Amino acid sequence: MALKLLYSLSDHEGGSLEEVLSDFWGQFEFCDDVLGEAMDEVTTAIRPEVRHFAESLVSGVSENLEQIDKSLADFSTNWALDRMARVDLALLRMAAYELLCCTDVPANVVINEAIEVGKRFGTGETSSFINGILDPLARKTRTSSQ
Image (cartoon, rainbow, N blue to C red):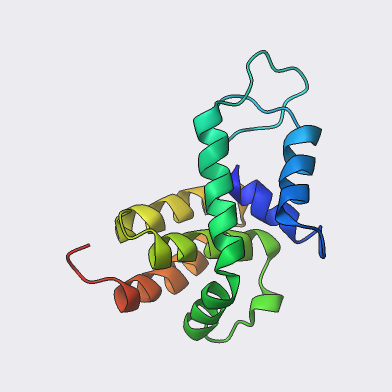
């Protein structure tokens, strides 16, 4: 859900985060599953804790975007952020936010989740691309004890 929201943000240049969230939740109905797949007919509403968690990730990325993008640029040699696939960039931003600001989540969990989500929504190269940027970012920003 958070990845889909972050992806949507790039379509709403100039709009507030609140507008993007409102549009996103108002225009789609989602299945209550791990991937939050959009469905034509849904019998259950999205769980409040899922919505809250997705929104907290998106808000965190939005509030820390400058720091996140600088960190990603430092570790994405040979790739400018504006040349990255939108899905890859959204996923990298979300994971980088967790690595930089959510230190209670172990780095290996953040990276593994990003890789798994990348396999689902990205291309065949997404998982190795994501790992190639997030692994050195994690080693630089986290101590080995985290």
